[in-house]
Length: 130
Image (cartoon, rainbow, N blue to C red; front, side, top):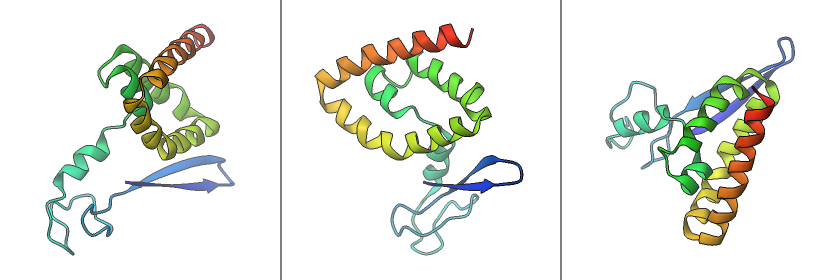
């Protein structure tokens, strides 16, 4: 999944476009393709995965169905998506967080540290955005 940003000077906003790629041959897919037209592999699951936004680092620390993940997803959807800097933060986060999440899953010390930091961040968000 590749995310591209288009900056509009007139409206000063950021627009994200999802481009799906076949994980077998790495060619672009259309949204409704179930099988890649180049290598004929089943790509129907890529659509389902692309539709689910992830909280990579928080999910690695607390688990995908935790309160912390749900809270931060709601914050992303309700607050960050409304602002240019929030959209830029989300874009950068999606670029760098998968590799950080993989490292966190294997490191108990880092997981403990991030668990405390994330809880502090959630506390600050609660106070600021009441």
